[in-house]
Image (tube, rainbow, N blue to C red):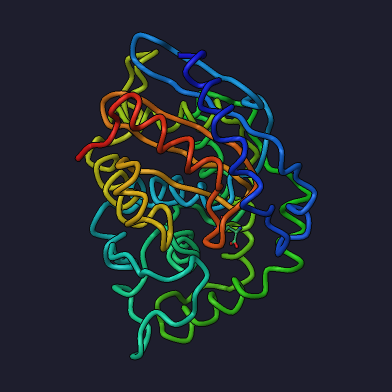
Length: 305
Ligand code: GLN
């Protein structure tokens, strides 16, 4: 496996030059665009990593997966469906123009900013600090890594500059989708985006999703298997933003990307994959990361279709 992953890194390295690191969150501009790591977790082969797979980066939108899981565990499918829909928007992750009519829950999904921000309000907890702590604890649990924490600099950087997310949050309030204090909700969302992980953590989280909530190491069911089905379906249709259709055709597995340069891919029943390469394409997806998944999918016949 490691030899295959190394060949893939070598072959995909040139794709890094097609992208740029995110700069709209100033702290992310400090990333080294030449870093590239892949890690897989699979039955039989265990954990295999190559390149910069031990390098940490912030989850960014990949945290939307755990926000959705936390909300599902706390409020059930019905509670989640009432607040946020499941249709792909076909628009960028931070778009305002979801529809020509008034904004309704069915116009947003859990994998765009507005949807994830709305879902933060469903997390159980008396305060937003408590809600975030429960989200962080769940992330630690499914990654099997109790030391996961936020990158304070990235969190503060986004909090200081994230006015588009502020605008989206006020829009959710304006249309009555949420009623909470905007800054409190946003604080939880920004902290979630700033959780620092490695490709290994992503591979392990993805592997639990691939096994429908089961941690195969301990043999424990960590969360409801129906919630894993729900999440994987939403990742398949919406996880790569407005690049999800293309990704379904070229790679064919549920996945989630983040502007920190990570991609987490779930191969149902088989494998979890974590990739880090921070040079992004125009949609905010890792250029070399997408190419690597395409090659890996072809080589190992990973597509679920
Ligand atoms: N924190 C980022 C934002 O809200 C996450 C976006 C992303 O990774 N696509 O803008």
